[in-house]
Image (cartoon, rainbow, N blue to C red; front, side, top):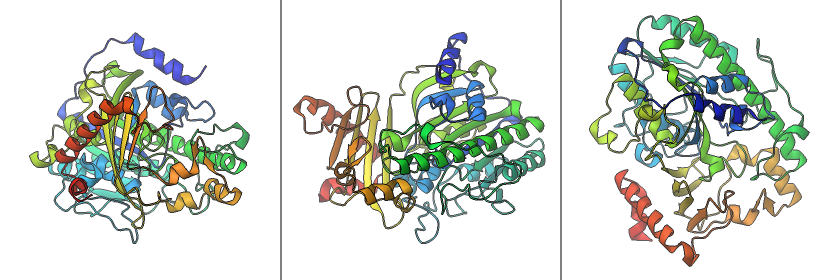
Length: 464
């Protein structure tokens, strides 16, 4: 029996109760960000992969079944986590590094800046990938002295030093892992990391998701991805052990999540579930939430408001009007009311990959508005170079998993999926008269959200 069933049974042992933050002097936050991790953990139902530390965190906290990134691209997603804003509102339209050089608007306030001003010790270890620094002024930035952001033991040691140096001061620490993002060759497993025991996988044992064709190249690719996930899991265990050793665990809100979907075509950069629906585990010092499963639809724009709520710090009013909302009040619930809709946006990944999209997802339907659908859907560089995509090209495949390759590359202006009947998001019913009322409702709600979040792409309603 999968661990998922065991975890799901635990909430029956606990009565629903709200979560109340600890006393002000003890409000610490540890945010663990995986890079390109999908729902590939034991606690999320993948019984072929070994993630004992992430699974243990779920048993000690709240596992959300419907956590959604606001965008499926690294820098924009991280900006949404730190600001509570969607990418079209923050200005972090695409990747921050190298020639892409997308940056957040100078006027935006982020978690490190707001918490610095409230007297917190803020820090980030590993991957930062947002800019400018003036908007994200982490008090401590540890990007050097590591064997890369996959050297999870070195990262945990730096974290332990950060905990020690914090003393009695409340802290906010981000662990920016690079696993399981692709590296220049594979998934960063070509060299050993001191003190890090690698877990390898046989390609025949992996679970091939429905958006990838079950081919030998894809299975080998997935096996290497699994190895990277297990290394991430080891890192999570190491940093949580350091937190316990420094006696900070009983006063720290721990949040574990991923920035976007798996680094495979059909997932990352898309607004389908494979690109946005991701792991979210929250461990609160309030023991009443242990082992709970929460089915609220939570967005990554809700993370910053939650942390600010925990800290007792407010965002500027104008920015707060566009931000998400705190999920602290619902941590102790299983099916909270009013958490049934999430939104998503996308502009670019790399600077050369313009493909603006807007999305609204409810419990029953997914609506995507492709604002430049005349363009062919772009393939991110790391995905293009992957053995999985290269295999598709070399074989001349006409399908990509359960989708036709043509449908993946050439998209209509509007996409509407009935998730109850079509969970794989294959049959676009936007033109079906039976769904006219649903389409009109979601169109209207999406436009209202765009207006609320001051979406520059609102101009499309007048110009096209």
